[in-house]
Amino acid sequence: MGDFTIRALRVSVVEGTGDGGDYFQKAAGHWLIDTEIANPMSGHPAYKARRTSWGIGVLGSIVVEITTDAGVTGVATGFGGPPAAWLIHHHFRRFLIGADARQINRIWDQMFRASMPYGRKGLPVAAISAVDLALWDLVGKQRGEPVVNLIGGRCHDEIRFYCTGPDAAAIKGMGFWGAKVPLPHGPADGEEGIIRNLAFLAAHREAVGPGFPLMVDCYMALTVPYAIELARRAAPLDIHWWEEVLHPDDLEGFALLRQAHPQVKWTTGEHEYTRYGFRRLIEGRQIDVLQPDVMWVGGLTALLQIAAHAAAYDLPVIPHGSGPYSHHYVASQPAPPLCEYVAASADGGSILPVFGALFTGEEMPQDGKLRFSDAPGFGMALSDTARLRVVE
Image (cartoon, rainbow, N blue to C red):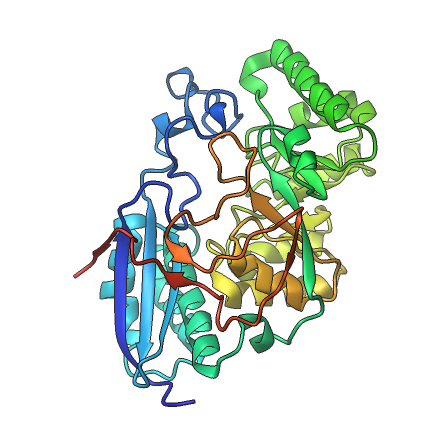
């Protein structure tokens, strides 16, 4: 298997639009409805027109490459752009060069503890995530095994997907288990916005018919009273779950939602970080499904910590997006193998690589399902055409 000692670290900023781990850095007109997605900035008229107007994709994607003395390289992408790349190159490299790549838990702990003075959530943890994923990829490639084998092995040879996109009928037509659509309007739009939201959701329910799981992504845009009222009036539409309706830190708000609608499924976690951020979500039992993003939460190492805690409460963990990084986790768990695919195409009606043209070997769902290969690591390699700018 060779020497696992890390001898080189290279961090790059991705310069190709639409490539890499930043979901939001897409070409203009993504999903063709950039003007109608409720979001945390919806209450500010100057920034309501387009998500990109308030800078959602300004940071961009990064690539981390870690090489051992044996000449094997692990690679991963993430988000955070130049600031995240700077942190990795100038700060976290001290915990990598000369270390044994198999000591992932120790390296993670060192990076996290060393970064606490300037951030325990957000950008620093996203940077840690990219390093962590590159380490898992490296160890898998050097051992000649897929990452799923390193985290307990497969419980499932096939996983199924729901798809997040603008057209529930198109999603059903592509064979997905269910569809999640973005809510168009928030509290700033008042009663008229609620009426339009209900009409929007009713149209999607009519298009997919009864029984097909239909979920709603509220993207941290709502308030407790608004969410309670919207869920009440949408009850006849049989919404499978309401996602991220509140600010991530409003844990008391989620308790009020549970109290008002105990039969409704509430999900969140996409914008939460590390095992510490998820502890109260898990122990409070206000949430029906946890949705950490493995590229944001602290990497696969953090996701496994969260999953172990959630398992003691029989609380499902269905990761947000993240392509193959999530696939390996889902396949390793005894829970029903359900994963999210975020439609990467401009119209949301076709299957494209989550990471664009950055990698070769990215496995994608077909007919809403994916059967695993035995490709080592996460099964991906940098494309020869990847446009990268190395951070010095």
